[in-house]
Every structure is written in C-alpha cells, then in structure tokens.
Length: 108
Image (cartoon, rainbow, N blue to C red; front, side, top):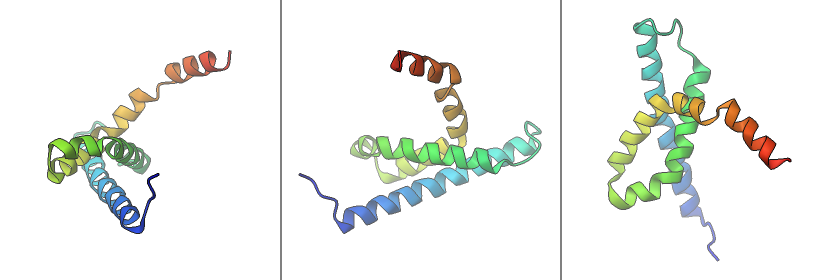
C-alpha cells in the first residue's frame, strides 16, 4: 500500500500552487485582453477564479502523462494556456443539458 509522506505532500502542494498561479496569470491576461478589445466591459474575478481552478484540476490529472513525455517547462506553458481557456472549457463541460441527462439516467 502506498502512503503519502511529507515530501510527497509538499511536492503536491507546490505543484498545485504553481499551476494555480500560472493559470491565474493566463486567465487574468485573457480577461484584460477581452476588456481592452471591448468584448467584455469589466474584468470578472469569478471568471478568472473558475478558469484557474478548472485548469489546475485538469493539469493535476494529466501532469504525469505530460511529464513522462516532456519537461516541466511544457507543463507550465500548458498551465498558462489552460488558464486562458479554462472558463470556456468549464462552460462547455458543465452544460446543463448534460447534467440534466445524467441526473435523469442515474436516478430512474
């Protein structure tokens, strides 16, 4: 049985913080770009946080696969890009029709 020791826990916490900070930077830059180009009037903090949290969880899920083929620099770049598109991906992933179909099929 695998146990989580202190070094693994510290490594996990540092990875989460790194991915979250870089994804937040990407989401913030995208929101600033949208406000400069008049696609959106204000910078929305909730959109930045949702995109960053979604990107962080996705990256934690696929980091082992990416690190087996690439270096950490590619993971940081993907984190930045995922932060920028994280809110749109989250919006498409959590569509109310999909959730409604799942609930109906699950609780018949």
